[in-house]
Length: 236
Length: 245
Image (cartoon, rainbow over the protein chains, first blue to last red):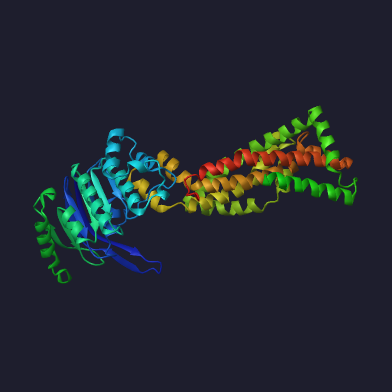
């Protein structure tokens, strides 16, 4: 399984009829077992890029080659659960083939076991995010897209959820693409970091972290973050 | 309890009004009740109520099924909306009487003509309501269904239908009340039985107790259907919404 992205441009026509370029040149390849991180300022077109990669938007210039039969799991910025179905039904509707054991284990990791029969309206944002994660993992994806899964959660909760995501990502050999604003999340979860420019987005810098995710020690993570924060992205 | 009290208030108002106006124009409740009992004993009440109910059920089902499908299509596909809109406006503003009379002239005084005419009267309101529902569908959930490659049938059942449910319930409720009213006109003009026919007979004979007996038993049936069928259905549909504890 492999994802080859070769986008040469993407623009919107605004309501006033003006053309807005959202994406410039975005070219990269992602392999199975790899976690790519898209890192860039707010509004730079990350979500647009994800929508193209997910096949939700075919209106762009360039080419995206996805392996045939690739299963996609997606966690949107908002949880996008079905409010009229319970937590368990939400997962099972997306993943009808999931067996009970796998589902129980997934709910266990994400601490959702007691919420199985709750409706999404009864959950906090943090819990709803975890249900969205459970749904994406339950289909056993070949390609996992995470659009800021940790945004607007408090630090302690974001940290716990990040560990849960790390556990789940490590449990399966798949391609993962994560969007985040947070350098700490990027360095802890990612194998390759793509630094994007402001709109129209292009890749400014690619940082490959050689050490496997699970073995990175706190000093190593600190050192990578220190080096990255010295990058002069504005002049690239 | 509150409902019972409100019902008692209705009977009391009726009784007092009948004392004031006089028996000839507004008979008191016991007079109407005795006519009702006589009609029930002879079996005529049930035959006529049954005939009307059957027409309501058929016309309602036909109009809801067809109207929902057309409304959904018009809400989703803009070409269908542009093609169908002038027809819809025409049908919405066509008086019920015109449709019924034309149906009887073209298809004869038949059951098919009556039911078709009633259904045509209800159809456009169902289309309009369901079109609004289809327009209000959440595109974010559509994207979710596409991203997770949900098959069409499953997406319709779990993603689309629950969003349309309140609109279907609204169309059903307003449609039912419309069909109740129009079915009597159709029966009055061209059927040999049913509540509308009996009211026509009562009108010609100026038999006010008979007229009231049929009107009220009919209203009773409507009330029962509303309480036993429509309201529990709505409660079931909205059970996922947060209730005040």
